[in-house]
Length: 212
Image 1 (cartoon, rainbow, N blue to C red):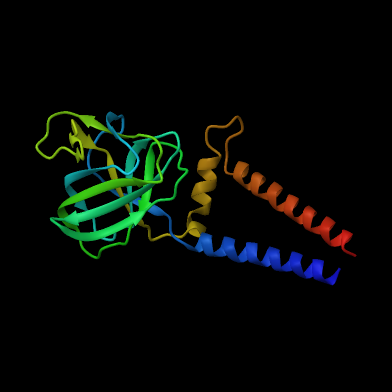
Image 2 (image 1 turned 60 degrees about the horizontal axis):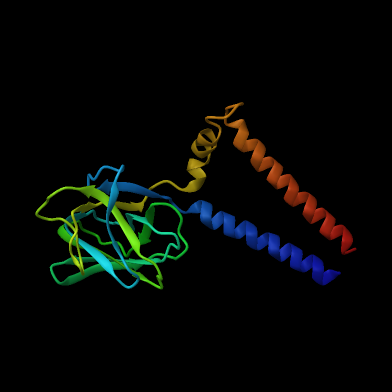
């Protein structure tokens, strides 16, 4: 019984520590896009192990993540590589199993901006063709793949860590969660959080009671 109580206490403490660490971090904010309209279409598709590169990109300073518009049913792991000529500047890899069109790949930040960079995306562990989304049109700096030029440019976004923590943004997030509902207001998020806290407290009390 003492061991059960100790395990329960340790578990709750670890959860509280994890929440505090996550809330103390700063969310990533969008710093720049490559001006490609978000209502994009499929430009090309590549098989697993393939990839696409796009030149004439501006990599902002302190970029911590790069987003690219893709379409796939399995969501394979995506590797992003940024080059200046043939020099590797930074790279990163996303997790597999993503859902949605915009895939975010974390990369090592640089202290300075880089103009005329080449951004490449490749896949690993994919057993399907992955589609790249963007805007069609002739361009001298259109994207390219192993099979040739792509008829347009890819949609790419650049993000970096913001200056505010999740703690300082909690009220703004609560306000947004309360929008567009039958009973709108910040209290909606507060109510949901209170119900979750009550459920955790009740489950903890019942577990402690059974262990006595």
